[in-house]
Each structure stands twice: as C-alpha cells, then as structure tokens.
Length: 319
Image (tube, rainbow, N blue to C red; front, side, top):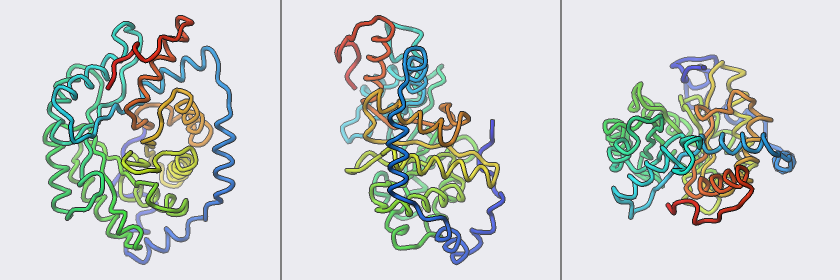
C-alpha cells in the first residue's frame, strides 16, 4: 500500500517560492468545462446489476464517513452514530462497518469510546470549520486538541479568501503546518469548498496545491454551502490524484462530501473512481463519502437486493 505523502518528492522545487508555486499552478492545463461535465454525465449512465451492484453497495457502505456536524450535537447522538457506524444493520451482521465517524473536536473522545474495538476511524473537522476564518495559531490549537483526544483523521478547511486572492503560499504554508500538527498518527483531509472556488481551473489548482503540501486526502466540501460534491468536480479531483501519483509516486485519497444521498448517486461516483483513477482507489483507505443520509439508502437498497422487498425508511435508524 502506498505510503503517505513524504516530505520531499519529484515536485518539491515548485514550492520553493511564491513565484515558482504560482507559475506551476497557473501552468496547469486549463479545464475544458464542457468536456469535463460531458464525461462525468456519460460515466453516470453506466448500468450496474445484480452481484456487481451488491458489491458496489457494500463497498460504498465501507467508504462512508458517517457525519454529524451540528451545533445541537450531544454525546448521546454521537454515541448512537458510533454504534451505527460499527454495525449499520443490527439485523444483518454481514453488513460492513462504515469507514469513520466524523464529528467536531469536542466530541472526539465520545466517538472514540463509541467505536472502541472496531476498525471504524474517528475523523474530526478542525481549523475553524467550516469558514476557516481564524488565526493560524487558533487553527493549529484546534487540530492539536482533536489529535490529543484521539482523532485518527483531521479534516481541515483551506483559507478560501487567501486562495481566491492568489496568495497560494499562505494556503500552502497553512496546510504544511496543519499536517505537522497532525503528527504521525492522524491522516489529513484538506477541504477546498469547491462551491466557493468558482471555476474548474481553481479546483484543479487547489487539488495540486493540497497534494504538494502533503494532504493525505483532498475533499470537495464542508456540506455547509449550496454547491457541494458533484460528479464533475469529483472527476476533476480524481484526475488530479491520478496525475500526481504518475509524477511523484505518491497516492492521495479523494473525498466528495455533501449532496450525495442515494445508492444510485454513490454507485455513479464509484464508476468515476474506477474509470478515472483506477482500482487502486476503490478502497476506503483512498476514497470516502462524506455523508449523513446516504447510509440509510444504501442499507435499504442492500436489503432489497437480499430479500426482494423494499422495507422503506422505518427499516433504518434516523440519524
């Protein structure tokens, strides 16, 4: 299995200065928006049936970061979410666990206790999520608190204001600092908030910027804005991680988040992964869904395939 991004790689020189970083990012090929959206739509029409569909549903369940990021989150809610992550379908022990539970830093300890003894990871959003409007010292303290509480993964947000102003080195330096604060025990997901980046060219630049800075995952969205994960922006990020590995030998994961609610949607995204990045990414170590309601639909479709009957929403717990 490929290792996490090393401290140096084949593209280290491009981050030597603000000018070299800018030159590299603006030298990336421009995105053909029409072509990108057409390819994403075309791949979304692929039909998957019977055993392949059952495999895809189980794979998707295993890739879910079961998420609660609300001001009204309580320890009881987080414990219930952790129990569901470990055993999504209490009536069927063959159902896989989810990849992780994603919570705010102050709920990490509760989540760790809830998933203890399982393979389910605990992810924590940090760096003044979701806006990211805080001083670097505050952001790093947020990360260190989450890691000290036992977070296996940290989901950070970039400073979109700095990125859109063209201050790429500031964004790069913050990601590097957060990666260092994660230490060796926590993987880092870097959230771009693609709905605020305006253009596909900016999403491509942000993807490469995050990977150059040492991201273990690049992630579309916080789920807190109007436009979140789409097939097109996820396809673009999958192309970026594929090309980055080709140039550096370093593999980086992808996490679309927000707006993915049905099994049909999830399967479309898995087709994107397989056809763009390849089979190496068809594993929850390298691909995740940031979701809350998606898991319920996956479980209902799974039961329908097994029994021929659709149980409806009462079959699953309400998150």
